[in-house]
Amino acid sequence: VTRVVAAAIEQRQLATIEYNLSSTYAGLFGRILALIEELRLPAYNAEGYKHSPTTAERRQEHTNTALIGLLKTNLLKRFESSVAAFRISIHRLRGYEERFASELAAGRLLQSGAYRNLLQLEEDGDMLGLARALERMLEIDPEAFDQQRLRTDVDHDLSLLDRIIVLIDPLTAEQDDKLIHVRKQLTALAGQKIVIFSYFRDTARYLTEQLQSDPDLQSFRIASLSSDVAP
Image (cartoon, rainbow, N blue to C red; front, side):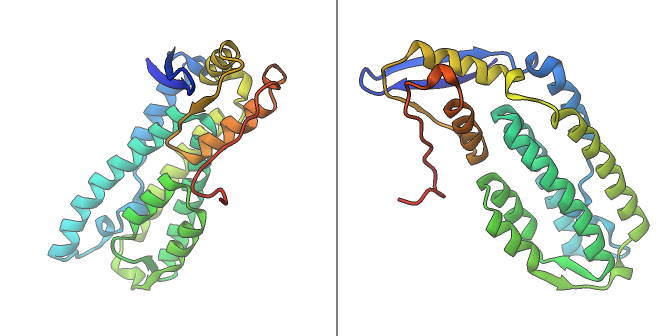
């Protein structure tokens, strides 16, 4: 059970909204979890495909393995936050893996340490930062990498990501159990000032759009505030 908290400012009351993530979207969470666990994410572990890695590259490979675990956890955090945030991440990851393989074949590689930056930029929803990071690449010798194994793993991931996309792209707000519960709670708190906090900006945007278009919440003045909103 995951909890979302809405705060009524003037009375400073907390209302806890409980819902079951596993049952949301007819149990898709378990299926998507299994697919995410199978991802190999070679774009985040280029050192693991070197024919003759140096000692430093072997150490980096171990670091990359831990990073991949964090990335998978982050994907699940975004799915827990909202399907909208998760959908954006999955499509972005698919495009990134494709680009990684084509750039590596052409002799270009993201500079050392850039993968951790990409993970943070993904969490922050910083699209400009992501675009800039992808442009900062090093010239490398593609023959130093096991291109066949890398391409196999990229294709493996693209297939899994396509399966996830087929599952999540048709989902609508009407199937969002979390959103339904938030709407009910807001209706019960009509006339009060409410603040809803979200870790991800994509979720905040999605929630704002859905609540603003809800005919039952027209008495509310709904706005979103985040670091990308002009003062």
